[in-house]
Image 1 (tube, rainbow, N blue to C red):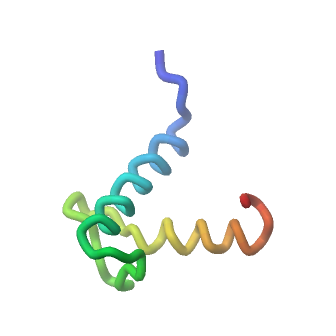
Image 2: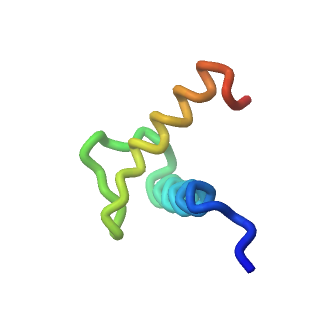
Length: 59
């Protein structure tokens, strides 16, 4: 049985990719055109997180 929604799965996948990027480069200043090996655009997720934090949706 799956306990996570599709959105949560995508978020956790993006989190893992961002963490891998950080471990490889030591920062999260992801270039705008960077794509993970699987084609995922990590920068989009990081921008959404920054927006959500700025708007008070998450802390």
